[in-house]
Length: 407
Image 1: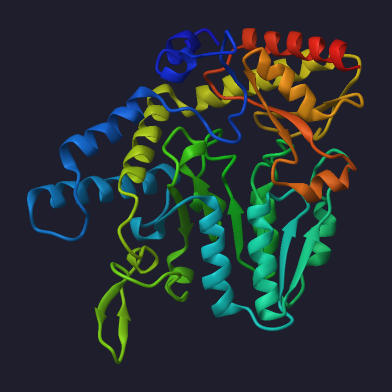
Image 2: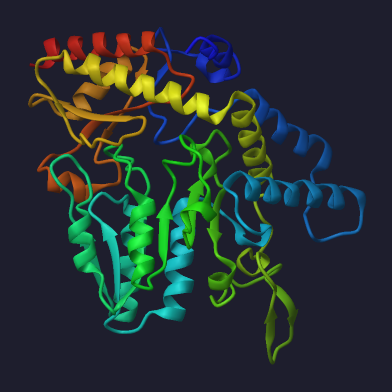
């Protein structure tokens, strides 16, 4: 891309100047967490140096300024995903907590014995375990959409799973283990035609593509800040106001109340009903800054460049004779998952690390899909807009070296 200056962008990320085992760091573990630009780091530094105070708690200047920054971040995030109201933006620790919140709160209000929830075979554990726990509590049933050999959801099988007992569909937007991009708009429409709400795990999509929750007509959408160039410990649950208002609080304590007596507590309005206690104030500030940074570059440019990286990496990896791709969906984003012959992925990853190349190895918190392919795990390279084709070439050299050493 002639107008995409990746060399200049890389200067914004201090950690990319590091050396690992005497080699320049090549970071291909972006699906696990992304690196942080100086712009985001500076925003948090400024908060602690100049604004540090609790929010919603005081009339003094620091508290008011901190509150303004905190709520400004909420409004900025609302605009970024095109939610209807800032009160539909709930701050949580990450995607995992967002899903647990819905499983606990929506589940307690709307699930009864015999009810059903539908997920898919390519879910992260965080979109499996909370629903299993709900099913155990409520004596409900978990149903799983199968996938084909390429890792794509079988839509016709999904339709068959929907019944009058289905109370929720919860699926991943983009698989962290395979890179499969699910047709979430179609999945949502099918569920809505049956009167069923839908939750989307957007942990792997918010950083790569434009998300418009109203255009999708999604009922719940969750993502994590640390996967989109912001700090750890912050995430967002978007929920339609009509559903959130019907759901009981998730945690009890300060902030989520209007008044407390020993006889009765009156809960606060949205979004504070779901935000008990002192929040992670720096988190939303960092997330707002991360989105500003992305918008300054241009998300459409980022998406195009990352798609080019994925295509280039896939083609280069295909040149290796013993390569086996796990996940070959037609629609993919930023992840290539593979094995080299009979070599254990951990061994490949260890040799690559000796060369300064960071990849993820193992089951990627997605054990069921690994069992589906009858493998212990994969080597996963996941890309961001600060990666380069030259780095991919070095990855290929490293894999070839690993093959020679381990075969």
